[in-house]
Image 1 (cartoon, helix red, strand yellow):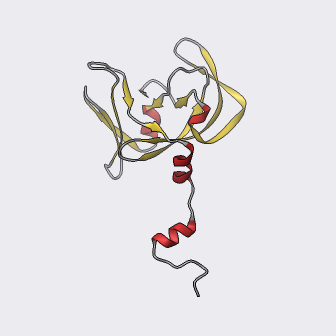
Image 2 (image 1 turned 180 degrees about the horizontal axis):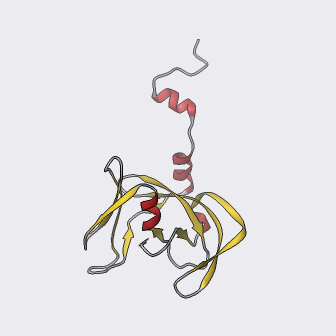
Length: 147
């Protein structure tokens, strides 16, 4: 869910992360109705029908009941938004290319969500790591074993 009132990106599920670091001194944050603690942070990957997006830092707060993506955090990372009742889209400030789009959860709703999946472990591993032997083959370079 895109949120213009939250200061950072948050998730409740530790399994969302491809990189994760436990915070040794949990940080207190003020939620809508209570104070809670951030116990970790890291990186997530969102997969849409168009692409995969690496988002970070994302903070781990187990007491939340939804995933929140901070509009302000996106702005600070060099994105801008355009929106209407049908869609809010984020664009790269320098290239103008579209980054992500959020759509109303319900008809005539004012809560906007992203229609994406969090990648499973194998997809995340593929996006996250580089196999230099495969890269050589893709560039038509022979392996080191060719004489």
